[in-house]
Length: 290
Ligand code: UDP
Image 1 (spheres, rainbow, N blue to C red):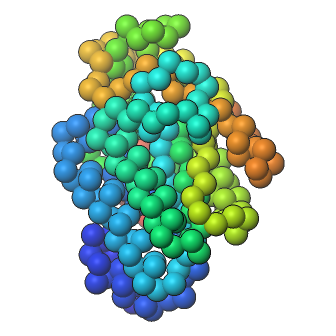
Image 2: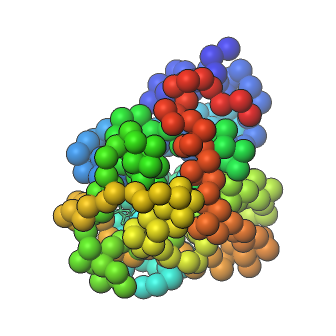
């Protein structure tokens, strides 16, 4: 049985659901880079939106009814409000964010039509870090789109300097502020969400963030501490589609499930650096061992 299928391939998806009794799905598969989405928007709609439609079609055909969906804080867009809660209005500012917003809407419409569905959309803020073992981490293909893997590749000498996209935002040091969350907290959040899928039917939306923001320069300073040597950077123009500040109000998840994140920026940077140091060329030297 094939263990990999493209969400755009409806026949392959049907075969997966026909071959297994699947009661819950964690739907991660999507493209996720803001800058890239402004360059190849149609691919983003195809993979992220069509992929989700196809998944729901297959699920409803085969009686699978529970989904945890990877949504995104980018849905909130350029809003002056800090922190953001789930009832704040959506104002997606780029194609990536619009695909995630559309997916939430199509999930809501699917839930209205199929009341037996239980769907939890987790609006991730900015996941960074790696498994603390140093054996599972981020290994983007090509030049990294996201800030932390870029920094990490500069630190190991694969790239020469970090471009800092804009220092004229209305933030304390002028660089973009984000709510970085450790990938292990993201993983824990999914496990807890799975446990709570049956609490209610229909679509529920939760922020997955820490409630604390860091600017690009603050993140760079923390990562530099983990590395122990300076990381060259250069201020550049703003990147298309970026917004100044995105920070979560993590209260809803805490009130609903008694759960909150436990790892801070220091741990995120230390763990990310451990992975990059142990795997300077990512997984190209072999698959992860855990
Ligand atoms: N950023 C940067 N240099 C990079 C990549 C990103 O300065 O090489 C900034 C970006 O402008 C934003 C923050 O880092 O303020 C986080 O960007 P990232 O792409 O990691 O995540 P996003 O918030 O776009 O999902």
